[in-house]
Image 1 (tube, rainbow, N blue to C red):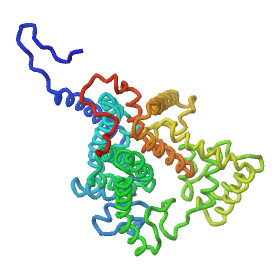
Image 2 (cartoon, rainbow, N blue to C red):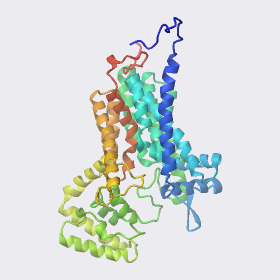
Image 3 (cartoon, rainbow, N blue to C red):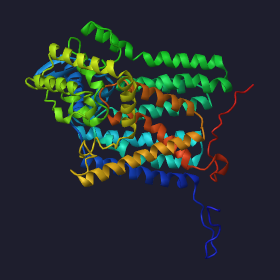
Image 4 (cartoon, rainbow, N blue to C red):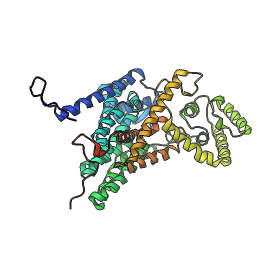
Length: 479
């Protein structure tokens, strides 16, 4: 079908639209819709409590006092419970827009997230065709799950950006290996890990991909050199962080502690082990795990899987009654949690060693992503809130649609499918080990889900009517 009309009805020739105009206008419309969605979330559901204030306190103290620490009960003390990636971003925002101007941070995150959408579209276009790029842009721009996090001063928006930059740099590197693309990959890997320790998984998945996908086109030896250099460069930012932690706390800690505790603080191993035998969803995380050592844990909020026998029910009831008297997990109470967990694991090793970890991972992938909205945690209790249950079910359906489209895109097995699959599996395996599941922990997979879903919706390469789309086959090395 012709895109341009040769003659107007009056007989005069019309000026053809340039390819630049044809491409720019739809892109701007998609980005405008994406911006409107994110600005609406900032207006309707801003979230500046809990972790955002922890990051903000660290950034403010670092900027004003030169101490990477938090203020507790009016006292400033050094900390290592959070990596410096996000506090660095907050420091920049505080210098530009004023200290603790968190709405300005949200607007900056909106701009960054829209940049992520553009890069996702660029990756899909290069891996498949131009129509896949358009689909990817719209899928990413209008996804409420990722857009919602622009309204929270948390690491997620920057983590998604770092992962997408890493993907884009890898695609460009495989087209024509060079040191600038290698450096960009290493920077993206580093910053992803500086935001969150689990961000290092993108390097674990993509560094081998440099070798695997590049060796046939460019040879194993140069690919090995590039991959090794990228791996080494990506670790360099953690050297000063590890030195600082050794100098300040006399511990070797190149990342951040698993339980977000400073040296000398109790990690509550018994309670954490018991929680692993109980929690599989965000409601349990909120009502049980986050209340530990500070608030009451009510017996009636525990799921039925928390008790295997009537005797265990009585033991758990007595334990929680003792804890709730002071809401403090003493060493004695922690030991009782540990004994209860050991009993449950001994009696049902497969259930608690395999079944519940799989259930936690499934919940983090499939649960309605309403954690940032004013929706009841127990969204499934229809008799209490009809509308919220129906909304949550629709949200779950939308989330499932993204996943199913991505699975369909896998059937076409585009370039980097193996690396994406490796990232999904690595992340799921890691998430199976945590005690307190949260939906946001699978959000880092969404840039790849958008790309795969777009490939599923786009025509096959030989059906694409748009000229100029890059081939998914990368150029062979010259002889």
